[in-house]
Amino acid sequence: MADRETDTYLNAARRNRRYGQTREGSQKQRVVMTDETAHQQGLPRVRVSSQGPRSALVRESSREQARVKQGSPKRTITRQRMHAVEVCAAIMVLGLVIGLLFFARPSVSNLENRTLTPFPSFSPQAFITGEFFTNLSLWYADTYPLREPMVGAAQSFKNLYGIQPKEAFYGGNRQSDELPIVGDDSSATDDQASSDKLALGGVAQRNKDAEPPDMKQAEANLEAQITNGIYMTDSACYTLYYFSQDAAEEYCGVVNEAAERLDGIATVYSVILPTNAGVMLDAQLQKDLGGANQEQAIDYFYSRLSDKVIPVETFEPLYEHKDEYLYFRTDHHWTQLGAYYVYESFCKAKGIEPADYANWEEMTFEPFLGAYYSEIGVSGMADYADSVVARIPQGTNDMYYWLDDLVPDSEIPGYVISDLSDADPTALYQAFVCGNQPLSKIENPKVTDGSSCLIIKDSFGNPFTSVLVDSYQTIYTFDFRYTSQDLVSFVKAHNIQDVIIENCVMFAGTYDAAGMIGMIVDGSNAEVAGGGPDVAASSTEATNDSDANTESDTDSEANPDEESESESEA
Image 1 (cartoon, rainbow, N blue to C red):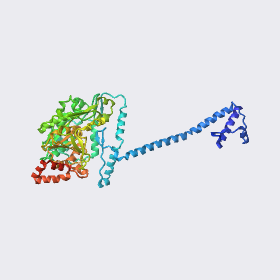
Image 2: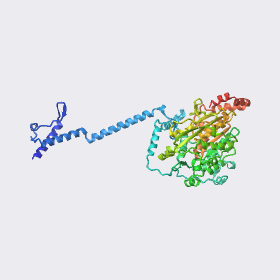
Image 3: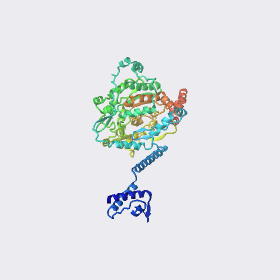
Image 4: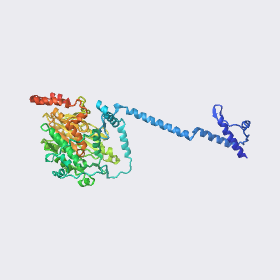
């Protein structure tokens, strides 16, 4: 009976709380209806002892108050969702603000060791076709202000992976074409398409019907070559090379065309470099991993060049010194020492004495963590970090480079060997000739014979350029991935005597490199870039003046002031 009365009283109290609350003094309290009040309202009168139902009522009231404070489950979920929306909105607003920082955008990625996409040039045609907006989108994504820290964070996250094997293979899963025997032209008679690429005497010829490459996509494809077939040990990483006969023919055809166009104007040299795997790894191991014998591959390239191209031996000079520090362990590039050995081979082919490398001032930057470390992300790789040893040429350490080679007065002063003692460990390869630039120029005041050369290069050409400084009065470089210059016009305008086309075999053996260099050779890249104030604009006048008045041309070469004024137009 007492329990029934208690339940009745509790139900009445709950019903009463639905309709009213009151405050007593300064504290907020719910007031429970007394039994007398309940009786006056027609509810049953309940007598509750001080220790029985009344205590139960107090406990029930406390629980009810706690539920009111906590809110219902639906309200809790709604509140949590609102907080999540607020956080997401704040992140989006912050990202938008950062993304609008146009003047805080990087131009070079130290982690990836490359030049980032430049802001696109506007033209009515590009606007109508939509190309401008496509390039603008690429620029925006590639130069986002926090992109470098985010890439680094992703790299750090990869380092948290579990135990790494001592030997591993990344990318690749490809198989090289079978290397033809040098001098055997039987493949050309079996396939009409191949025979169309071959000129008289088994010399490669450029395929004029090939579509010009999309520059951005071609650059991305070349970058992918670096990590497309990496063999890793517990002390170094190595990049394999997969031979493609058709791509090799196309590349050699482009070099042959350059020599043909420059016949009687300049001498063309071909420098094709092996990767670190080609020199440092056993030939059988490379074959087992699907790669090509790089010594034989380079021989094949050279066998397809015309007599107007002088090939420079590269594999043998490097292989003879393979026990020395020729290649980095955490990066795909070679060292300046390796570049010097190939430079000696170049001097032999040219018939000149090499500079005395041993007497150059030496600088060392460490630790260096290169592209393998950035791309693969194996934490143990930091244990065999590299050192960048760079020696300064005796002639000069000064140079100029152009971020936009279509703007003549935008040259930036720099150094052949930059002091990067305080730089990020992933950026130390930038010590050589200010990195990968569309156009650069080095004047050596200690050489006054009027000698000059143009180096069309990839990133391997950076230390190679640094060791060439003491052998020429003037050196120009094109990075074939970024330049907008016309080869023939540039050579004529600057009285260049030697053109050195340098590439690592993993780049040379691709249609992308062949297509991009081909656009420099035929001048179509200058047309794609929209013309502008490049050297081609003044080259015609310079050439006509030279042909019309030989004496005037001779005086111009002898007068450094006039030569300097002419070259400033670059």
